[in-house]
Length: 203
Image (cartoon, rainbow, N blue to C red; front, side, top):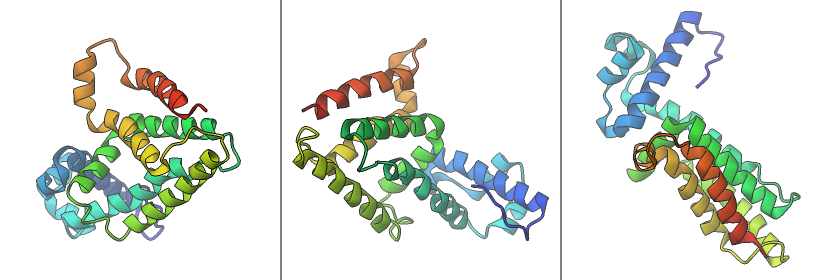
């Protein structure tokens, strides 16, 4: 959500950043349909007319957040290296996704909410997601063909990694309620997922 446009003044950059930060908070909690410009303006500490000076609509704010999010969201998968040790590469991906859920829970919920609504504002970029997943799935498929990993469907392996890491951000309230006090869900999940995927992928 950084804004390095030199044509904008320092105050304009600060206000845009405040609006986007506030919108992330509101959208991740309320979803796109439940969020309002009034809520975003209040969270940003700005008047609604002031907000509308920077963004013409709720849709415009949401689109800017999503535009910046997809590349961030795909970065951990891009790091999967075909020349690395297969099990280490996949476990590294699991750890990166789990750490992203820890560091960026609101972004995870924003993305999840968009998908639950049928991804109406991501239809143009979903082919980019598919292309990257297909590329990395082929790497995993090559590893299994070469006998370096246990046989596994690469697409469903990636889906499982998404489900088992993003869950901790998207359902944070449920996870912390069930575990109770004195637990670090992410540390415990990290140890469990390392064990789970090590066993799954072992030849």
